Amino acid sequence: MAEKYVCYPMKMLPAFKDYIWGGDILSTRYHKPSPYVKTAESWELSCHPAGESVISNGTYAGKTLRYYIDTLGKQVLGTHCAQFVDFPVLIKLIDANSNLSIQVHPDDTYALQQEHAYGKTEMWYIVDCIPGASIVYGFKKDICQKEFRRRIAENTLLDVLNVVPVNKGDAFMIRSGTIHAIGKGCLIAEIQQNSDVTYRVYDYGRLGKDGKPRQLHVEKALQVINLHPVQPQPELQTIQLDGFTRKTLAACAYFTVDLLDVKKAAALESTEESFHALTCTDGSVTLQNGTHPPLEIIAGDTVFLPANSGAYTLKGIGNLLLTHL
Image (cartoon, rainbow, N blue to C red; front, side):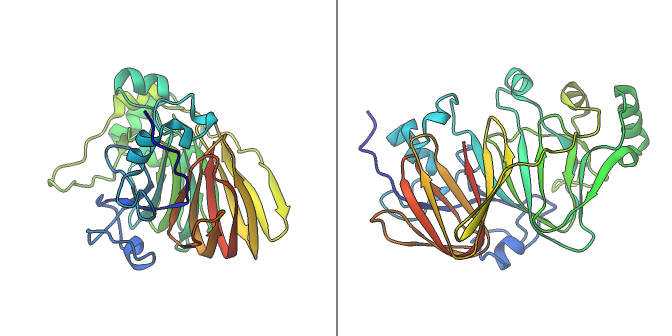
């Protein structure tokens, strides 16, 4: 039987990943306690067994987010999460010190059949980037499976990929089946399905930590890839409110992500429909929720508010990504 409903704003301690393309920004800029010299990713809000985030404050300090959800029940996620067996999202900060591999993710149908895991649709928000940074985002033109195989064999795949220059504040929806890659010099907030299934199709000839070329998954990728250019993203809603702006960056069945540009104060509410997750990308704010102690949120922090947390305010100056369903 679930315990009494304990509901308060929870600051997260992330899990860390030391993939070969990582850098030191997460440690130097955000002062994250990574055990690695080079840290590629911090899994800010995660119930994935490959890296679970831990609650750092309050009654459940020291417990994983998964433990909190399992203990109190899915009511803490909200009614919109009832359709999902597991916690539906995973939020990351990604420091690309060099180019990531060219890759594609499957949809739920294929992933559940072949990998016994969920597929992966994700969105990227460019927190910062070096001048001239870019991403790979789909193809320049329609191609066929035969050409795809040939270009991988001939080392000419890059010639048909759509390379997009990026700037701080840009956002991209990466639906399952879309070929993509983060380019060198990008610091990205990624909100994605709760999945770690990736099919790598090109990796610049790099060697892994074992000194061998990293594994490619070309045949699996061909079963799920969209071999056409990405369709333009529609403009989503922007609301100008007293003290802040709320702009929807991405919306799909698995998550909605809003950018909160707080100039003075933002008044928000977590209802019974969905949890709220706040990831601060710039500045700092103080969160006040009912009679709970004020919680300072600085750049790099992620906070989880259970469903039905009620009204809360953010006071200060900062940019935050609000993830909910």
